Image: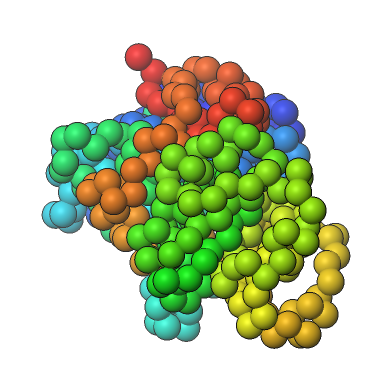
Length: 343
């Protein structure tokens, strides 16, 4: 038997047992290395839903994971037993119009591990053992790269995809609202893409300190300055806070003709001054998950062009999932909290 971190509803987290799965053809069984608790996981834990996706049955969250290959099914040729692997939680169909256009993240038939979008729910990656298709795994052979770092490939891919949606930022000023995991990943992505100046806004000193450590040029306590000081200071704004006030910051900071990329999940009933998009000719675009950016993220991590180590605040064994979630909810003490295999 094996164990998983399972949500039965809001604030109802339990450790449950399940049979260790056997890999089918073209599947691989992975032993958990590390799995990061994401903002969507916290929404599921606190509210029983993340955006429009609600838990309708016991549900194992988790979509940022690494592990070690334990067993392989027939037909597996690229992955070997003992490999350290990054797990891509996305499994697009590969045949719909979106997939054929190179936008697999918008796939009509997307299977995304750790999401309650599909019912019956597929279990996510907060499990000791799990099986996935070989095509969702990438082996990392560099011995110095830890399983904790490898598990950061998925959130880094979000930051890279956000910058892709921003268009060229080479030589430009990029402002990012939110110094949490995705905000900091966006900092690293903007640096890789050649941004001349990266500004991060947040209301927590700790978050800004981490953002500075991973490459931000200027960090601003946005709650302590008048909004006018931010007017027209950025060519591109990345909204990574998922907060209505952060959207207003982006609308203020974006120069005329600039672009705003929404990465954060916002409240469904929020309002904002949409006429600014027209009167200042702003581009306002969304960024959902990632596609080819997952491979870019792995390359950046294995070479440490993106050094994600400052973001990893703590690791807890699965048996202490409650402690891990409690810490992850406290932004004054943590950035990225990960679950690991039990000792």
